[in-house]
Image (cartoon, rainbow, N blue to C red; front, side, top):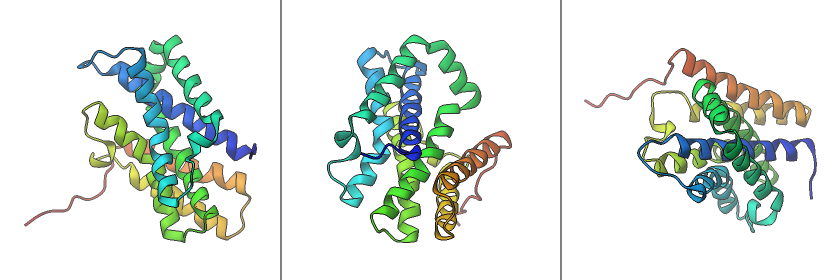
Length: 207
């Protein structure tokens, strides 16, 4: 099993996405959420994008079935929410911290995994983006909310930009770990900037 720097960064991304989903469940005022439903929302948020990526690549068994450390990372995220619900809810609402970190990490690692399976440049970028956003789409759907990708804020585009940067630097034989950090940081910076200044892509007008 690979216990490299990127492996542990991936586990961290899984944990923050699990926190994101669990906290979203706690915050939702229209539904009563027991312990299992909070855990399930965090779980499906954490594994949704990676599972779709693995299925698309024919990578079986999918990552969370093959690697029990992924499940431990999800469980740790869930425990943090159980023991520190107010603090984590404040961080999520004020800094949208967990969503932002999660998509940054997932984008780059999803792109790298696609490359490792011999996928072409454009498909690798798209799979990196899908890895990052699909868990959030499932989470928002479960919460009966409009997914981020259908809102004004730049979300999926930030992931695509980070994936493309990763691929460019990879083709230039840039250091892998530094590439991971830089490309994930670009996703985070674009996302934070878009929210802070209320930026969005141009709308398509139907005549």
